[in-house]
Length: 489
Image (tube, rainbow, N blue to C red; front, side, top):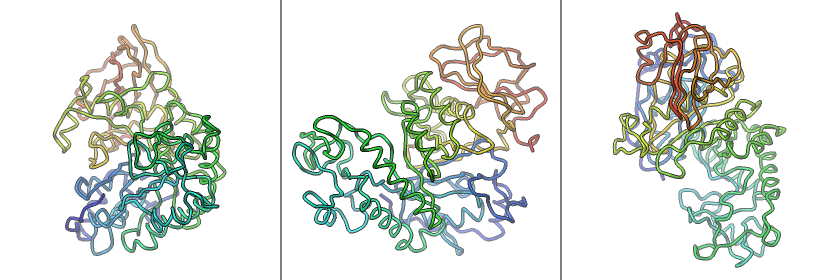
């Protein structure tokens, strides 16, 4: 839920131009800036395309110089966020895009798989209207009902959500009409410059499967009649409904100049869902893997996948031909700090946020297609309430040029790692539970770089072999090369 906006940030035209020239990956001094951004391309010169998620109130935004560096922003609706960077020439999104024309902004909305009864999340004519006209007993029912009690269904975690019949075409169109009106037609100035919708909980697997309860009664579990035959779950009924929604929504929004982005998930365990999504006649612009490489679910801290699951994520990401993957890495650290110093903290098992970041970015680069630009990366230990620009995302500090091939498995004197070659070196990651020791540099000698050394690469010794602990990542900088983009085209 958003709070009242703080005083709008302002900047003179002269100051804005200075920012534009200084911010990494923007197009102020290129011919492309004169022509406008090309569809689907991030700012030229980027090595790691990045995105950020910002929900809640207006507190927690970084300064303008940091916010403009991101390639995609997923934000809450409301006037508070649109006013943070507003100036005399427009709202936050317009200001950001004057500085980075390639930046994409999407508004968060609970997808059509559910309906929010919360005042801040309700769409259209409201839940009471929907129940009266398309609820239980209606010939055109939009709301799902339980098999045991015949009542509406809510999940155990979020009591304001209600399960819907996502495959109902009339509900699909009502959702589209209502959301579009709310985010743009009725939004006025706050919707200008926003490129599309981030549709939450829109996936091929039924949301909250096995965790639905009778509305208002969390002691009475139930199953939805619309997705079961007797007590037998029918997963194809859900996936068919979601697919029919996507086939309606994607072209409908495209006709209005808007993109559809999904919270999709399950890349490590259901890669086939991503293949189905990527093969749609009109694929969505992007989909988020909310638990990419490290995630907070399970024991508090950074939770890692098995090596096989990690491989599935990387390979699935690499295989995408149409949909862009938003690889969202996040975890929990032991710290009260809310500024950038929170990255120095560790989880209960001793993994620092910087360690987790480097594991994630080296994993990301194993599967990133730098020709098609098939993915964006996010990293946060601030949940979705605030975010910061990290130097690792800045090509002036980290840019190894173009990829020279595919990921390779390399065995050391103990254990093994995965690496990928780039013009200026290699990115290396160890997704196993065993430390790797005595791994040979693939060619010649290289400088081993991590978070605490990559800004001082020239002082690091050249080595022919290296070690890499379990669930860590590093960069091998080729002899004679620079870690930043000064030697890249």
